[in-house]
Length: 219
Image (cartoon, rainbow, N blue to C red; front, side, top):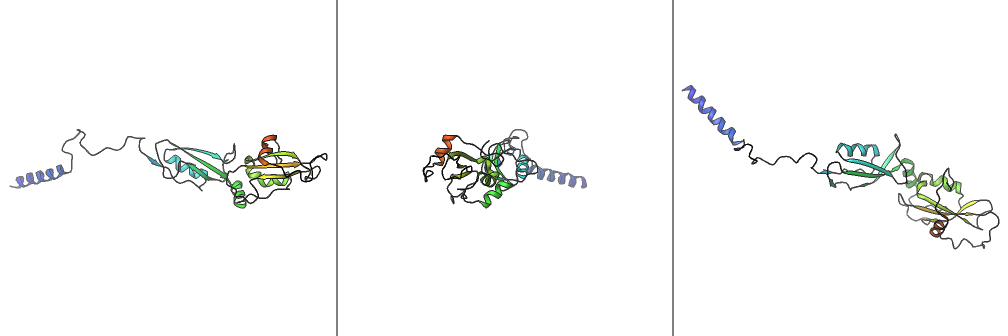
């Protein structure tokens, strides 16, 4: 009698177990399997405002490729330097495939300080090239300038006579700045108001765009 009870108990347990196991094994009728490796979608994290090193770590942990570029041509974030992500592509939350590229644009610490202090374009008309060079040094790669003979400029000096954007205009991060520097060698034939026809775009194109080096507007 005891053996019979044991047998019936095992049969019941076996029947219950069968309720939770596939009735047909290996015929493809089981629940859907996971997506093959490398085909799942990955959401791009929010990186704006983070240090470049932290952003890179976040992206690479997700098996995505990370690229970076500065707001000025040829700039790079040196080891140990503070660099903040200013813009990114694709946008946060975008779903991408495995090994997709996430690119960021960064600003260095000095550049960020420059834009915090100069949310609008400062008025540099009349400034010497040395003073102007000191102001724009953090974003020097975005500044182009030309030289033009000017009777308003003191003899032997170089001073700004035109600028774009105009003084007080909003200054966006990464925005290009154009300047015209007046020179006076003492033989100017300009009239007293000879600078009134200065066009910063025309004059920069006419004489060629130059960048300053060592706080000078020629390289």
